[in-house]
Image (tube, rainbow, N blue to C red):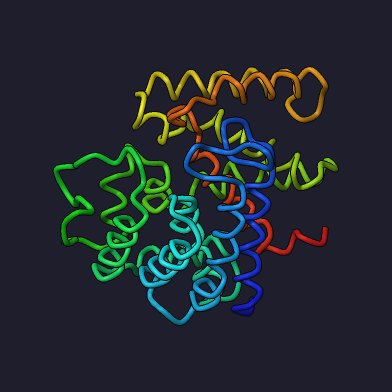
Length: 282
């Protein structure tokens, strides 16, 4: 059984690795957004530690809210809501049951409550993510009437983080974590392996953060570009690295509307899973 301290450190480490890798269109060292700097993400990664250490002894929604509240004490921007939403069920799964992390997270999601949903709605309101808009059912501005998993299922079509709750983290376990393990087995360092995983996720799943702001077609075009860069070799070749730099420039704009932020969140979840399963020292 993993200890609370081990899970907290793994969560912090996953967030630090994710933001430190030069993923196109995202914050990384020397690459900032108008409303969030690299240092904000570092502070956010460290801030969530205590909340995640307690993930096995408090309800899932309470862990999410505690992590978001802790982050808000260190940054004025929404730096990690998607990451917290993804990592919290995984952290609880790692702490409440031995054996398969995937089976445990399935149980955690099946056991969510309306109370969990209420805490998560409050956390989302506190984080104030961009591009949510109003929805006809289970709007986070109102009190929930369904469990957290049911609420996420209602949002699954428009949000890839919510889709993970509805599908028992299928993208994390079937795309992200295998891609990361393969990259590490090939000899890539953690930074390059993280970028490679990000590209594979972006190719496989059009980014819903972009889709909410610019439409599905724009998100699909970004995914096509990611696939082109993979074919050029990505982090493995000089041509691929040049293509990555061009892609990064294409995605950057003052309002960050082409930021594949949800893909970055899924990348962080893959990192967390692989670290939790013991791959840090291999």
